[in-house]
Amino acid sequence: MPTDRQITANQANAQLSTGPTSETGKLRSSLNAVKTGLTGRTVLLPGEDAAAYTQLVESFFKHWSPEADAERNLVQALADTEWRLQRIPSLEMGIYAIGRLECAELFPDEDEAVRKHLVEAKVLLAYERQLKNLSLQENRLRRQREKDTAALRELQESRAAERRERLDVAAHNYIIAVLEDRNDEFDPGEFGFEFTLSEIEVRAMEIDPNLFDVYERELAEKRRKRLESRAA
Picture 1 (spheres, helix red, strand yellow):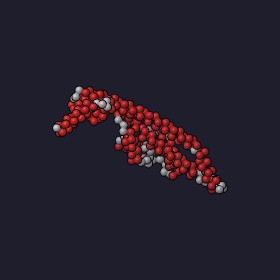
Picture 2 (cartoon, helix red, strand yellow; picture 1 turned 90 degrees about the vertical axis):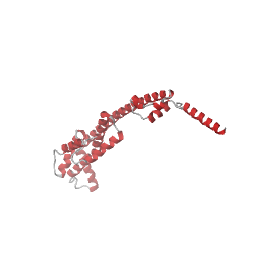
Picture 3 (cartoon, helix red, strand yellow; picture 1 turned 180 degrees about the vertical axis):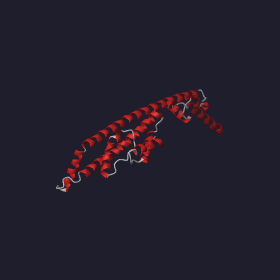
Picture 4 (cartoon, helix red, strand yellow; picture 1 turned 135 degrees about the vertical axis):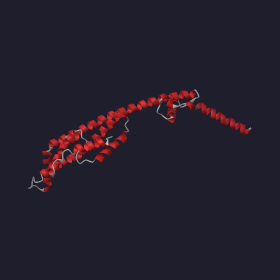
C-alpha cells in the first residue's frame, strides 16, 4: 500500500512541469501520457486524484489480503496497472478532442451529417500512430496484469498449502493426545502452532471421524446406568 511519502513524491514529480496553458496546448500535451503515463515509473500524473488512487490501492489490498513483501509488492503492482488501464479511455478521448479542434473548420461545404464523419475519419488518420500506440500499451498492461495475477495466486496458493500442512501436523498430534487420554492437556502453543484448539480439533475429526466414539460410548453408558438407578 502506498505510504503518504510515496504519494507526496508522486504528486511532487507530477508538478515539476506545469506544461502549456492554452486549451489546445493542454490537449496536445496530454498525448505525452500515452508514453509517460502508461510506461513511466510515476503513477500519478498532474491533475489526477491522489485520494482516488489511494482508495483503489486499498481496495486491492483488502481483496487480496497479502502477507509478506512478495505478495504485497505484486498487489501494489496490480493496483498501479489497473490505475493506468483506467486512464486509457480519457487519453483516447483527449486524442479525439485534439483532432476535433484541429479539424473543426474542415469540409465546410459538406452536409453536417457527412462532415461529422469526415472529421472523425480525418482525426483517425491524423492520429493513427498515437491511437495504435495507446492500443499497444493497453495490451501490454493487460498482459502484465495477467502475469502478476498468476504470480500472486501461485504465492497465495503455496502459502495456503503450507498452512494446511502445518494444521495437519497439529491435528495428528492432537489425535495422539486423544488416544492417550490427555487431550485436555493438549496445548497447541507447545508445538509452535498458530492455530486455535478449535481449528485443530475440527481438522482432527476430519482426519479421524471416529476419534471421539469412545467418549460417546462412555457417556451413553453413564446415562444408561443413571436411568437404571432411578428406575430401581
